Length: 437
Image 1: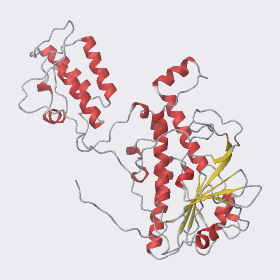
Image 2 (image 1 turned 90 degrees about the vertical axis):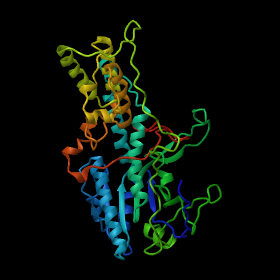
Image 3 (image 1 turned 180 degrees about the horizontal axis):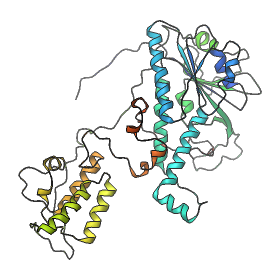
Image 4 (image 1 turned 45 degrees about the horizontal axis):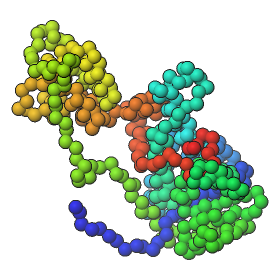
């Protein structure tokens, strides 16, 4: 147990993460680009996600921004955003005006990840069989795929939330039916406007602005002690002469020296806590068909040649499913499971499998459970180099079309995806095609 660590709050607000949401053609992108011409803003960057209109918006009066030239892949998008983040940090350290990053749009970002989950689900073994029988069959997109999509989204959002400058996100907003606790539509309840995107988008934003065809921009919600909006108490009002510059620098009072990067360590529960340690299983001899337990016995030259192949076959397994499948196959064929295979394992493999030096024999039946345990714990074959990447799960095996082997790409393009998230939808919202239901 470590010592207690605390610190006093600074009282300094964080750089804003602004969400501009609204119906189609309400000026979301125009408003964001207009802000880049504010003299209080430093370099500005546009991340065009599926809109394809960044060049046109360069003609907005006063606009001054650079377009991020990504190749459309998730890895490159995240890499480019990280490059802008690093540049923004250097600009602040040098005493220059804050950098602005525009993400246009987060609706397209979530649609991209939703399409990824659908493609992966269609490649799964069960769904492939289902589609062979009926090409129009309904596909089951299980929660593990949505968890991975949320994990990727959260990685991008963590960069946005800790960005050393101003981030503006745009999202299409539509009206959705309200649902009750029973999952049914609430009778006579009015529809509510919600952004189309990942369900936590409005919660992650520090400012949520709504643009409309009927009235001026409205602050729906904002995290600010200077101008706090109390839900259910303060009625949102339209701001006729609104600009993001007035919001950030005048209304919220932010700027160099008056704002700080949000202190948000990435939460990571992937450690073994005290009391959670798991001892490797003992290697009991497996009963042979008919219930008779056989003792280890030496092999003839012919038997040894055959068992060498089976041992290599078992040790090459890099997933639990494959290791178990190969062990089951050997049980069914019953080829010398009582044979002593200890001397067929080199010292490195013995050490990895937890076989102690004082062990004098090991049957093939005892080898199977040790391989399964090792692969389950380390996510790699016992024959793989210790610095090799863990093997992908079954549902990731076909992802090479979306994300090529890291060894085949430049090092700068390889980025890890982490943070846990759930794939459930927000209560009170209507499912959107291509989104979490």
